[in-house]
Length: 175
Image (tube, rainbow, N blue to C red):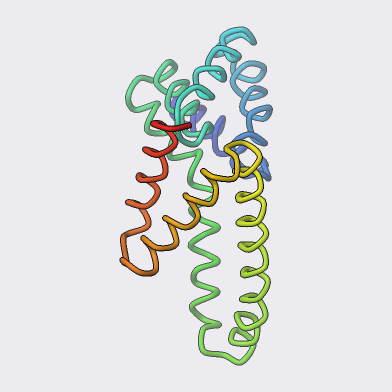
């Protein structure tokens, strides 16, 4: 019976928490602290702080920890599965819908109209990124990194991951 409670404590916030992990945290707290009493508010705050300190999605980290505390390894597995299941179900549904629409005129029109919007959004992100880098690093470093990245990607066909590692190394050594 504890696994059913663990599943419900994390599945319901996953369904209702529109906006991802951070948006569902108050709902998880309601379930874990108020409804089931598995921990008090202070303990939940500590779990939240630990979840924020580690890399990766916060909701799944918290679910894994709380599930383990309440139901051991099985509880951890159930909690993480219940956390990702709503998103997984929605993705499968939408993928099926897109697969059915693929090849239709409406789908082609939609993708044709979305491409310029995506290009503009990516351009805005690049613009913001460059000017934030300029403010933080200065003219010389920014121009060097932009030029070096461009040359590595376009002229020498270096994998983007290696270019990112190069940029990280440059920043760690010189900035």
